[in-house]
Structures are given as structure tokens and as C-alpha cells.
Length: 87
Image (cartoon, rainbow, N blue to C red; front, side, top):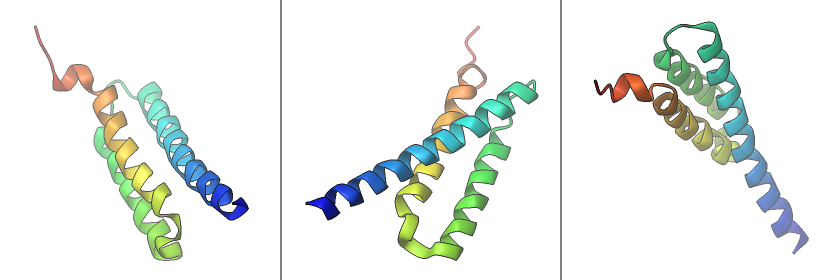
């Protein structure tokens, strides 16, 4: 039972660390630019995902998937009015 709890906590920590990393970086990009650079956010997370995958393999799979998913979600959230521009 202890091993199961440890594995679940590790997965939860990986997903939350991916969320906070992407949210912090997207908030920084939003604060420093007039128009949100969605390509910079997605490109940097894809680059970080490739680097971590090459160095660690499948060990941090939840972290890598959460990085990619949350970068797409944050790009849509911060570009909501640009994507769905209704006059």
C-alpha cells in the first residue's frame, strides 16, 4: 500500500509541476508582451519536452504530457479574444 501511495503522489506532483511551470511562464509572457506570443509558449514547452524526454526517457511521462497539454490550454485561454473575435 505504501508503494501505491508513493507512486500516486509522484504522478500528482508531476502533473501539478507541469501546470505551475506552464502557467507561470505564460503569465510572464502575458505580462511582458502586448499580444500573447502563443508560438513562443508552445515552442518552448515542446523544446523542454524533447530535452527532458531525451535525458530521462519515459520516467517523467506524466510531466511531459502535462507540459504539452497545459501549454495548448493556456494558449487558448490567453488568446480567447483573438481566436473568437466577435464584434
